[in-house]
Image 1: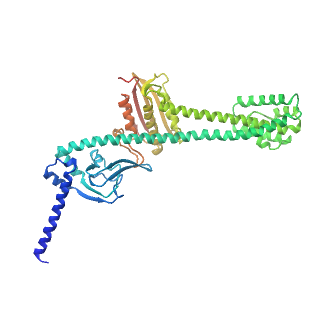
Image 2 (image 1 turned 90 degrees about the vertical axis):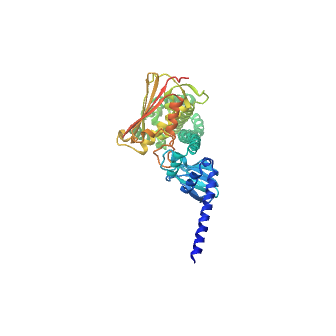
Image 3 (image 1 turned 120 degrees about the horizontal axis):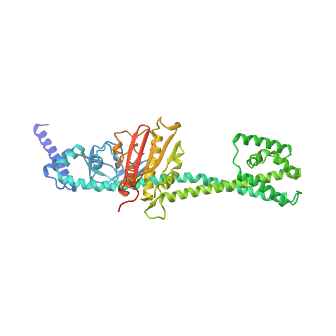
Length: 495
């Protein structure tokens, strides 16, 4: 190959590079944020960045990747999602000529909090963050455009994240409520089924006994026994296990000695009603021996029926308590701003979170019962208690400290009045919050939890409700083994 041929090839290659550069410059000029750049700055920009082409479905950046570039979509479509738990939440879909990925860089984040995936064949211009900061510091037209875009996107992402946080909290509460409702509902259904079986066997026994020869009239005699037994069963406290077992053994021996079969099945229920051998001795004098077995079985079924009815009643009461707690929590059928009892809100929140409190967490409450009612947005205020108490439980579970009382986690809730403010304090004995991150915990999207486990919106949402909606204040004090949140709320919101 001659020197002339090599020279011509180099010229051709350089021309192709120049044409490509010119094409990129023209493409970047069409991007609104770069449209007013001077020609020299535009050429510098195109040389600083790098072009990337993606196939449909190909990942551009993954959640948790270093935030070292800002991107411009030249062609195609990019969908940005955030993984929360096992679900992916759509944050945005970008079209050609749009800038994206700038929020983490501008906020000083080290990693991307979401993933980008190509929906179609996509062409992306990637600008290193150092070049991006240089562009902002030297070109006011770009700065103005990007800051306006950032403010709009920040608001959109924040609104979306808050909505997702509320939906996530709602899902958590719904799951907890379903768990709490399942136990009494299952107990009531089980008791109702057993009650049907009990009364199906009770009717023929009652008829059979009424036909047997008993003192006075059979109906009066059976009614007298029933009243005695039910009176004892409804008024006496339960026995301790050892006493219960000893009395059952005595009763089983008595029943077997008097020819009553299956005494071991009858004894527990009879003992709970305080039927002992002395009472049976007195009864056996008045009842023919051939009727004693049927009478014992009849008494056992009556007592079992009463016990099952009590189970249905207690289960129904528990379900009603949970429903009332939900109504109190959400302030259904009430105006948004009303006078509320802060203790009712705290207690309804504890009821809703009851399923999480069963996992080795003790709650101690110290309420000032003389506090006045508070003018507040009740439903929103309960979201604050939910976030703070739920975070306290998670802090205990994830970073359990040696300072825990009796080997258990503890959440302490107290209320008091300070001048014209009401103060609610929520304290946990978890591992604490490191001093270096305490100033940031109320910032949007700031979280110490792993990717997919926290959104960093809960405390920011609580801050907005307390400070912006209620003109109050929320502070945190933390050291190893203790974290305390103090919420101050004015008793009356100034208009």
